Length: 193
Image (tube, rainbow, N blue to C red; front, side):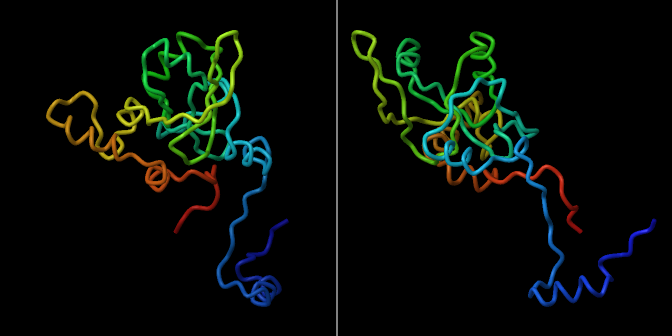
């Protein structure tokens, strides 16, 4: 059976004209295995979800994603950063540091989020083992920026150190997600002509 060429099929063209559309549309079938549900999007945007690194996709451009959304991740434990004497950082790419952390502790859980902020929730421990949530200032991981060569960032070249420090200091997630579209990511679809 041969299907008609629907671009030239008069009844569909009439229906499209009645609907007020001028161009052909594109539809991507919703698949909850590939696309974030409304509930998942809300959870990721309103604080995040604990997840192991195995459950986070590394896209071909080395950015991180859950289903069809780029996201960032971080370790939500203040003591973890305190023991290492590091400033709290979040990751936007599968960088060398994230690979080291995975080798060190493959079962480590990270807070995965799509929230655009400078402060993120972290477990803050008190004496006696009690903890509370605290909003803590974070910076982007410089290894991630190096991996992506974000705005030509290079953490190893001395002659670029001043420029790279400026890129790091002025980093904003809003600018990052203008360059790397956050949501929705498309996994196929029509070819642009």
